[in-house]
Length: 365
Image (cartoon, rainbow, N blue to C red; front, side):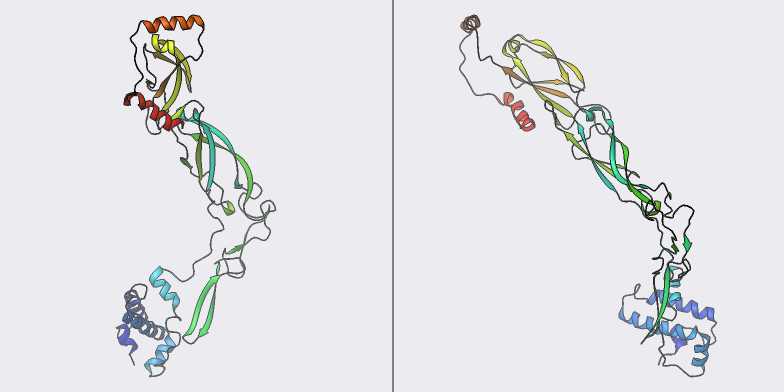
């Protein structure tokens, strides 16, 4: 049989303070959560049992007189508060839990047009969410009523029970059934929110559409989500943008693409034309002899960069339109024109001519 004093490493005339100090030191070294070794677990049981006996004045006196040396009553359990104090810096009592909880995050999908993302925009959107109850302002109580300290647990939110077992008295702690662990009770819940401190309502949220936002991108609006239970802090609102495709302009990153029809005569002679872009009119110079598939680039008139300043470009792909019906006079003039030029047989297009065709097929499907 091990001697309790030897187990703790103290003299037989050690003070209560010395015994407690020795136990704490050994418990930190041998506790199963700290030292997984099997031998350490066995030593921890001996150390705990020795401390249980020597820390109790009556049991220590009985032990010093030669009695109760084989007793294992409650080893490891009679002084659970000391173990909590050793490893957690306090007693086993965890205290009441707060009624307030953080609100849930919310996801909002917003449809925007391509023109909205060129410079960015703002949009007022109505959402269905949880807001603070106006009647109780989050207290959960009816007007003129306040929460009361729980009579069962005394405001601790926990109740302790001692259960006898083969190993001695086991002290357990559980949430108080009367107050559900809150430590307080609501004698009369708020009639508007049924004691939740929040209600469902519709409110208007001003959403900022960042310039350069792309389809499916999300923006986090901190603290704009649902208010929590009992007036707890708001969650966040995540806004996902869906960019509606434009009928004329397609997008590739920050550049815009469009196809323009150029009459055969204008393609031969050249001309200047003003077209309406997404953000206003743009003037295009069509040089004489322009070929189908060539691209006219207007710099700085595309989508604004999501990060940083500046904008992308607008690129217009030229499609030369050949007339399908000619008058007799037009046919005669065309015959005269053809007679002035040497005949050119049809041939395969070059890669340069096919460049815009590939780009156009990818963007416009």
